[in-house]
Length: 372
Image (cartoon, rainbow, N blue to C red; front, side, top):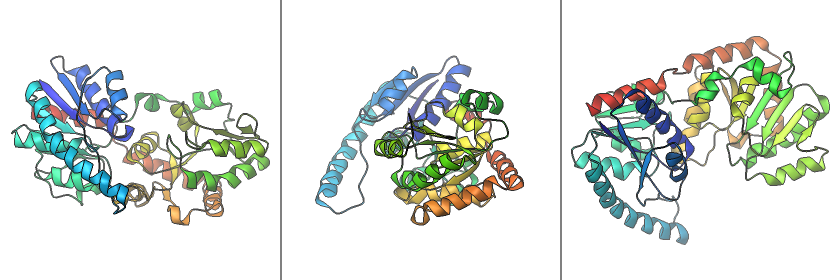
């Protein structure tokens, strides 16, 4: 049984594909798995590190601008798109897969389109509550389509009925224990802990809004707070240092550049604040956490807003759009939530209900059914 996975660009596309591929590798002895991605994005590091064979094609996305630089880039993308079809065909022909699976990123388009033309069964996974244009087009041709949430189904016209599979979550998060995590972080059991981050790179608007909140919290000590400024947020570490933070710590507040023990921090948290990427939301749901989401308005089809609203519409989370984000507005929402234990618990329970605990198994079942 031979399976090709096409995924790339960001960890949000790659990690779910790796989780599904790992499950198949663990449960199907005869499975041969090949990943197709690009040489200059995260998949080139993550996939080989996970022990999977990896081939590359050259592809990029289109920029939505008419600036000279964007026009030049888009012309190169058109040329790459033509070449990538030939590259995909060569790889697919040599590997001779039983099924080809797309998990998003620019690489999925040419690989799946080529597989369809070659008569090979395909399936595709929608990462967000509002699927992108490429996914919507591919879903019309794929034998099977998987969606992150029920909300995505309303935006598609598929060849076959969609299946809600959720998004696989890292095992260490699922195993994390609140009491153990709090002991590791030296957080008292009765204290409230807020965890905030803007993704691995950071989000300047969130860092800006958090600056005054964290300064005040460090002085008042009303609750504990761990915040990540991201790898691009070094300037904020200097600003906090100027306010008396030593090695990122002051009072009950800790500011880090990057959170490398997310399983521990999220398990210990009472409230999570961050962007609304599908992977982050899946982790929030899986761990049953109350959240305040600030969707990035800079992503395709504004999909993070739709991801966030999937929680809001089920009383499982809260949203502040970036255009409305201020320290005052965010601080008010934090205080209101932390002071209302019943509301906090209700939101946690509703978030937990949205989790798809057997996501890997659901995805693998669909892939294997096509491969057979």
